[in-house]
Image (cartoon, rainbow, N blue to C red; front, side, top):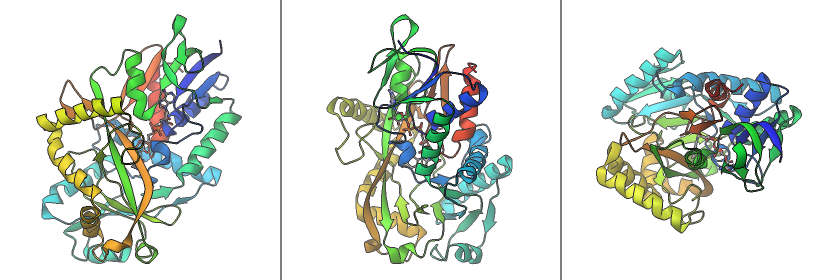
Length: 400
Ligand SMILES: Cc1cc2nc3c(=O)[nH]c(=O)nc-3n(C[C@H](O)[C@H](O)[C@H](O)COP(=O)(O)OP(=O)(O)OC[C@H]3O[C@@H](n4cnc5c(N)ncnc54)[C@H](O)[C@@H]3O)c2cc1C
């Protein structure tokens, strides 16, 4: 049987940065990264907006706040070191309804608490920064430190660094749970491991439950679909235009982002999905999993947990292009419906519901013992914060 000091389940950004952190602390350790797909970052980490968030969405008592801005700075340094493309384009946050003003004040307070650069700007400054933004915005904030990054470049550089540092990668192999004699069961046989880091993203809850953890949580996947702007409209967007989010929801709302490729994406939605990998309308959904998820969704809907009914109604309507267009036009009034070009870009947010407390979990959750640590609810901005989050994960494990 193969023997490793550390096994990491999942080669998304969380697994890869956790592996790097372990090897930095214990350079001689035998470390394996086991990934069920043929390559790294095939799920959330390779399908996101590629935005390095400045961190003003999160209250100072959250894990997200503790790692987002710091992690973003470390990732920017990593990008510079490895020649990975990064564009410090900044972001404007635009309130289009007076009802959003209290949320805007909270964002500014979060920024003050976290030492994040964020300034209230008037409409003249807003239009100077983003000429296509609403000329009569109710209020706006400028975050100069928001950036976009080449996510595939980051993942590839991490794999190269880890390989150099002696990590072993096993692709197309799934970690299944505890194996015989304290080993870890995988689809290619058991592996003896001193410690398991479960960084399995949308399947982290399943693997955690196999190890006796995550008992209070159920997963509901939300699908993020994107449209793209036709070239003439895209030319009018310089960086990122975001709405003021509903602070009770874990999603940031449909926004416009000039990605590192230069294309401008509009999205993502947060539509309840039928499976952890249900990227198409039905593609990636399996009848048994879909039935479980539909039951959970029905329960959330009937109990109206965390205003779930409103969320479901608001988001499901975004499947219709006309409704999606109306949302996007609030941020870019000159947008025509034909300027929105369909794309296949889609990602899944593996959102956990806290069953005991009847609410959507907003923060990251770490559970574990002396043999394993399980990273749960690694939703946005886990890409941005990953390098600092990995430090938090490794420290919490007490294993290195
Ligand atoms: C639409 C969308 C937009 C987003 N935009 C942003 C953004 O702009 N900025 C930002 O910071 N964050 C963003 N996020 C969030 C960010 O992408 C995720 O939080 C982050 O990528 C999570 O990384 P991860 O490693 O936990 O998960 P993943 O990238 O999903 O990696 C988990 C890996 O585990 C593997 N796996 C699963 N089960 C097993 C198993 N049993 N054995 C072995 N391998 C297994 C999977 O195949 C996968 O490769 C976005 C997310 C979505 C969905």
